[in-house]
Length: 342
Ligand SMILES: [Zn+2]
Image 1: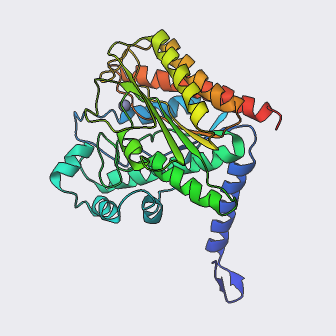
Image 2: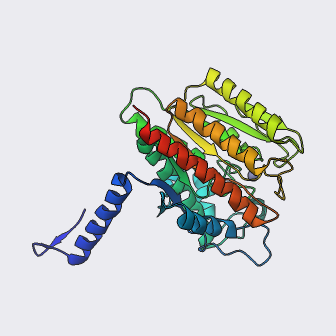
Image 3: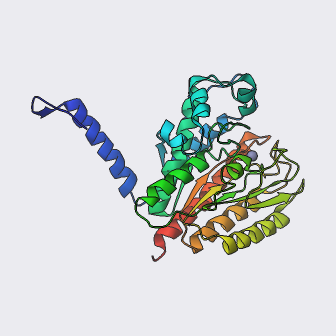
């Protein structure tokens, strides 16, 4: 509530209202740009030599800003404790916020604790939430990071603190249920090369969220959870068998579920140049992968929120190139959605 002091609106409050309205006006009424949301990565500093390629996010943001003017980039709000609690246990949230996780639990996440780590994790969840809300209005929107699918309700793992897609799915269901008589059906299409174990576990008894994961059979996590559909791929899997497996998985998904909202984890780590991927997909194969998923959703007019998930290229530029290609495909799909008759 804004306060009126002495009968006049405080100029500072007025400026805040105007800037907020300008921001929302820009976000909601600029019909020419697809919206992307990001969590500033400079807030989390890692020790020299840390194996997580944090620099890829800034490289991606710079290239997108320079090369794709049809995209608009927005700093995401941080997810609140209440939003996180739609998925995560209060004890886990509190321990992350306070930096009081046991040593082994912090080591499993793979990042040293810092206030910046917490802030980035919260904003990354916020970016997927904002992408999902925008997708309902515009068909497609994305988080420049996110896809932190190894996070469970009560623990993190594999560079994942909170599970952004799980929180966004539950929050969209809560918002939807205020206006609709039936629950929002969600599908998670997880094409990161590592299994979405946290997501699968969180939704294992929840038929309103359908989980599909295509991943390397012999890759992390070594103890896998049961998704609704799991497709395990052999080491060295190349474009053709991968794309055939994807098409078959989407056919099965379609037979079993009619989603109102799709989350797509477009991991760059199935690429042949990835340090951790163990698969052999080419740049062109990954473009076809993205087109396949985006066209599948668009033909059925399903809103889609995209997250980037993993990417650990031997050359960081290769990871960013895969992601740039993904955004080019996404932009084409977004433009197609705007031109499609309702
Ligand atoms: Zn991965």
